[in-house]
Amino acid sequence: MSQTALIERAEKVFVGGSNGEFRLPPEANLVVTHGDGAMIYDASGREYVDFLLGSGPMILGHGHPEVVTAVTRQVARGTTFMALNEPAIRLAERVVDASPCGEKVRLVITGSESIQFALRAARAFTGRDRCLRFEGGWHGVSDSALHGARTLDPGDYPDTLPDGGGIPRNWSADMLAAPFNDVGRATEIVERHHGELAAIVIEPLQRCILPRPGFFEAMRALCDRHGIVLIFDEIVTGFRMAWGGAQERYGVTADLAAYGKTISGGYPLAAMCGRSDVMDVMNGWRPADDPKRVIASGTFNGYPVGAVAGLATLDVLERPGTYKRLFAMGDRVTREITAMGERLSVPLLVGGEGPVLQVLFTSEKEIVDYGSMFRADKQKAYVFGVEMIKRGLFVSPYEKIYLSLVHTDGHVDRLLETAEEVLRDVIAKMD
Image (cartoon, rainbow, N blue to C red; front, side, top):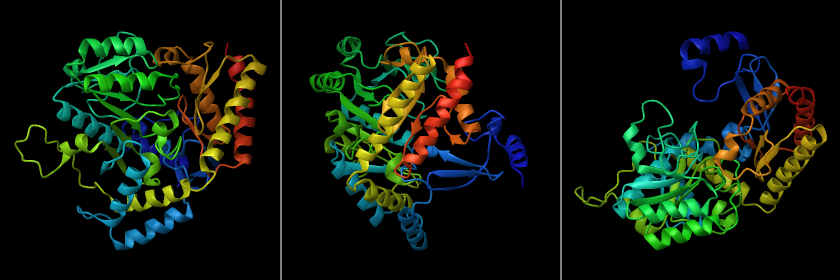
């Protein structure tokens, strides 16, 4: 069936013609048929170099032979059991061993669940209801997390509002916000509300914003001083920025950390881990009337197919040279696209680092928080992404570029050549 016919069918059955927030305009829309390594293919037979990677999970690319072998073997043995199974135990051990805060773990299915349960655990452990997050950070789609993530009027600290319809407005009272990287503002809010705060939750690489030196250390000190649980949302950064994730790379240990994407090899699976005493609120042997007993269950928790895919992925990531290779590619992309902007007189910055990058069209010298990111030109970023897709580079318009271990120097060459073409022939002419 033709790609056009498939898109028409999708329009009839999917709300808005897509199955979520990721959507493309007609001139760039496509239906993926399969992937192979760094490439994906659409229903018209066209190929694309994939720099979206399923929004991050495919760090080994599509159809990696070690992942395929592990999954095929496990499917023949059984897909899910609602019981302990060896792959889940082995994956839990790997996560605990690698995570600087790892003592106990709970495997779940989605990153949204892992953060939701982490916040719930912090509230139960401390007996407090409120949490502090950093405006613009992304912590999944649970009702408790969608306050202050996508505000259209940034800067009204510490107040937040629901980020979409159907989310109880009164829940915003328990989710406070501060600007990322602003130690003074965060300290002021914590000192005023510390008796009510259960957790400070941080996306360590906030979208593409790097932490300033001393920021995480200051948040760690505030949590220690006031008995607040420090949560690192490592869904993106875990096993991607370093073997020990953002905690290892930035040198600060959280109390709880959430992991996803890289630990599942492209299959649904996520985890939260951390201090034994905090994690123990999820102990199913606690009495039902224990006010600290947290329900953090799910039909597919410990999903063995996802676990073996994750184990195979971690086996590859643990090999020598992995992170040196990922950061070398990222540094090259950052350096060369930055130079293109200067050469073509297109104001831009490349945010992020290593294998997670984002091109922002802005005249600001530095992106330090959501406010400075919000002021970037979203229309140019959107056009840049759509034009890249039209030229065979699969990216998410106005979102992150992900790099993988199967991207070659040739793939990066093509990314850079195409980026320069789009910047020169399209973006430079928009003003």
